[in-house]
Image 1 (cartoon, rainbow, N blue to C red):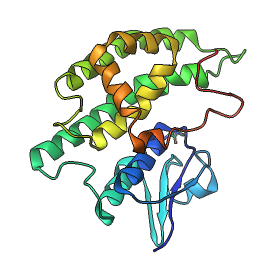
Image 2: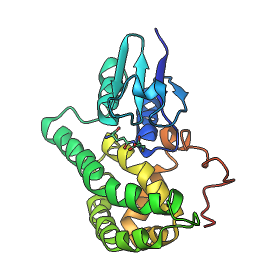
Image 3: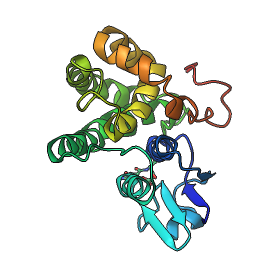
Image 4: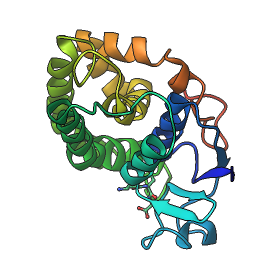
Length: 218
Ligand SMILES: N[C@@H](CCC(=O)N[C@@H](CS)C(=O)NCC(=O)O)C(=O)O
């Protein structure tokens, strides 16, 4: 069996999802920790984004497509329900998180903390302040979504949860969003329970180079 490579920095929430998918399926993978727009990535992704996958002759990009391949090419528990309605609900949540929550939570809010592009390198307060109201509304939506069963879909862990957890990990670490999460009782309980799940706990990325921990120190 050829080696399955996940190509991209482990701190990327989308790379992390694909590593959780491998762990859930019991598929061993080798991480190739490279930045976006490097030759390894550009060889697979037409726009140079991470993650990319290489497995023998198979190359793929886009986290959802990579997770589909991992789910269907290997034995092990299904990553999304095979029931059409429940499966569609999982896809619905993956899409909602990727198209609504990731742009505000990761690209705008977390990006403004970690990659501010300000002259002094300090967090970009304008971008942070601009994200707070939509972020609070989104946390409210997620809090409501997981309140009943403790999962985004049905009553079992699925790729929908795997896709959200890396974002919650970062929101938990940042000051404003950490306070919002602490107040959202159902979502906080959901986060605390699933962050201890083996597939997630074992794939938590190391802090960014130059930082000693994920604790936010400004
Ligand atoms: N839709 C893509 C998004 C991937 C993505 O945005 N990756 C980020 C890192 S988390 C990236 O490569 N950013 C570099 C860029 O946008 O140029 C997926 O699901 O894989």
